[in-house]
Each structure stands twice: as C-alpha cells, then as structure tokens.
Length: 277
Ligand code: URA
Image (cartoon, rainbow, N blue to C red; front, side, top):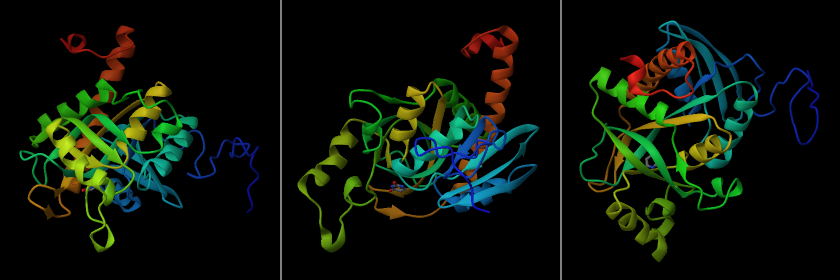
C-alpha cells in the first residue's frame, strides 16, 4: 500500500513511521545496537533469547527482542556517516536514546592485533557528515557511561580490548591511506596514516565521528566497539571476531540497563562507581 508522509521536512506517516528505517514509535527498544552491515542484524538476533526481524528497507535492517530479560534492538546503518546519520535521526525520533556501534576496524598500532576489540571513546573527524551538523572544532566524544559499560562487558567476558581514540573517514581506500585504483595515492593520503599513528590514534573506521557528534548534539548516549579485521602495520586482513563484538555489545546493554535502574532509584542523572558501592 502506498504510504502518505506528513511533509518534505518530516517524511513520516501519521502514525510516526519513518521514511528510511520504516519503523514507528514503540518498534525499537531505547537500547539500540547499530552495526553497519545489515547481515550482522540477523547474526545479532540469533544471540538473543527471543526476537524478530522488523523491517528491511535500503541499508536499514532492524530487529527487536530480549537479551537476558532486557529489551534490546538492532538497526544496520550502512557504511559511512551519511547513511548512519539518517539511522540516528529517525531512530531517535521513535524513542531510541542509547546507541552502541558494533563494527569492524583496521588497527594502526603495533600492539592492537587482529581479533582484538577496540572501544572508541572519541573520533578524529575525517568524515564529511559531522561537518554538516556543527563546526569542525566540536569534539566527537562517546558517552562515558556507554564506554564504561563496554569496558565492564569486556572484563566480564575476558576479552582483550583497548580504549582510546579512533579516526573516522569517508573513504575506505585513499581516506585510510590505502592505494586506490592503479596505486593512486595523493600526498595528503600518504601522510594521514603516520600522522595519526604517532598521535596514538588506535584505528580507522567510518562511522564513529558522525555517531558521536550527532548524539552529543542531541544529548543522546552513544558508544562504539569494533573488532580488528585489518592490521595496517603487518598488512594482514581477516574477517574474524564478529561474534565476540556482538557478545560485548549485548552485555553492555545488560550492564547499562542495570546502571540506569540504579540511577532512577537513586534519583541521579549520571552513573558513577560509588552508586553501586
Ligand atoms: N573498516 C574500515 O573502515 N577500515 C578497515 O581497515 C577495516 C574495517
């Protein structure tokens, strides 16, 4: 059936169904896992106690369910800032307030190996999308609560992890210092790798800058963990560790939901370790 949308400014139906993600208020849990890959949504769903696929429109595949008694949802964002920004805008409009990116990444540090988890607490804004929201000096920072929950989840699960700053680009190839077709690599793209490496940036990926910038502007919470599938120093590439990343994200939601209930009970806006003493 053809759907009627309210206006060009607000492409949503009268019941609040959003144009791109094809979801309405109440469809998603406030806790949302946001992988880039739509296929990862199916694999996330398999790890929950119960759940179902909700919709699949363009790059946006969604599922909702329960993990250890907690309502949880997942929505793929596609690759890069532009499609991620749409996913954040539309899912926030229907009630999501906490986002966890479950991604893959390339390490640019010697001690960060294939299969390791990186928890990204801030992003170098080499993307274009975040610049369309706010001036360049605005930092792309993760929620400290989501970051802490991701750390606690890795500790509980015994997974090797690193915490720090990542770099988000709009180009997987030249933007991350990889040669393009016929070895095309302009001088600025050659320099980027070394410049970031000596500044202790952990990794390259393509979504955190937009995710952290947009959620900070809107006072929403976001954090990110990625599993390392490329090591740019040893020049290895292997698609491994996706299940590990999904497990960490699920556990982080369980932990956050627990902390949020303590905050509510104690009338606190922010979580801090003394609250669970
Ligand atoms: N994703 C990226 O953006 N870069 C990599 O090297 C691997 C995954």
